[in-house]
Image (cartoon, rainbow, N blue to C red; front, top):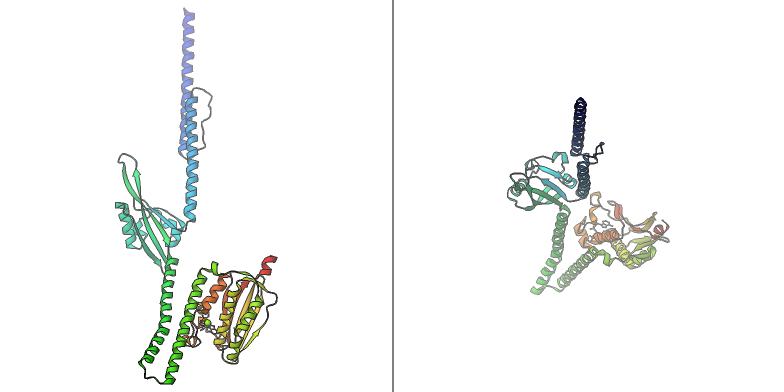
Length: 429
Ligand SMILES: Nc1ncnc2c1ncn2[C@@H]1O[C@H](COP(=O)(O)OP(=O)(O)O)[C@@H](O)[C@H]1O
Ligand SMILES: [Mg+2]
């Protein structure tokens, strides 16, 4: 009986010990599991539970590990998507600003920072009213946040910066007990300054053309009316008819120059470059204008450009030379000299048409290449000029990948030059 009792007590103590050990193990496991879950919660998505000896929690361990694995995979995927999105936003030329339903900016990309000249730190978490100086924009953002009203308009930020702002309303559902929908707003800002500049240039151009055409038309109309009235002696009649003829020629020149410019704007079709010898086209220009040079009592000296082959459209280069030499003829007093020479550079050739004429004041030197820009309008008119010659020259040279310029001193002369790509150089390199 005693033996039985002793046996029973030993068995009870052993069982008690087993229970204590087991429950300590379980406690250890749970605190290990909690630590692991805490680590995952804090962002260490690669942490896993490892076998701590007992097999009893294997199923729980497996499912925690599987969950951690799934979270890690999702996080990697989301981070990748976020990185791609950030990369896209960073490299966009369109400005993007995200205003949350709390009226504060949540995101701004680099294009928007540049446009508004404000670094990201000064945007984030700021009230939108404090950021946009334009009342209309801020009021529109408020309307979009409150009522979901989209909006777009143009905003002049600086003298040379006009942006088109578009507000896009995003409906966001809030989770939780008071599930409801609020509005976030995305501002999309496109830089339209260049478009506006081109539009302005086009309308200025149309105004200039109209003005240029008005003068000859008025002259023709006036003289024709006088002639129709009769009572004009024969000498005056001839003079009037001459004027009418000259003005008609001027209009004709203007129209053909305008057509030339407009053809050049679609240059890919009109310019057909080939390998050509520069000397050949210079000779053609010389032959063409020799008569006019002599008529104006000038001397044309040509220094041959030996063996220079360029990649260009011969007819267009001829046009450039004819324009430059004609100008030299018109703006050089009798007895002067016009010289044509070349500087052969590594990859291109620089062709000079220099004269000993009236020269161009420094302030006007860059502007003479603009359409209709003339230093002395009356003198240009007297030569039958249209004010478009140098604009055409510049266009042709640029289409060939070259540059134009002028060095000039008033009273001493002008040296107009242009460059063309050389072929020998390209082949050697
Ligand atoms: N060789 C030159 N010497 C002095 N002035 C020149 C010369 N070539 C051009 N210019 C100036 O540049 C202006 C623009 O030239 P261009 O475009 O050919 O127009 P246009 O000759 O019809 O007036 C001329 O009106 C003139 O004032
Ligand atoms: Mg001219």
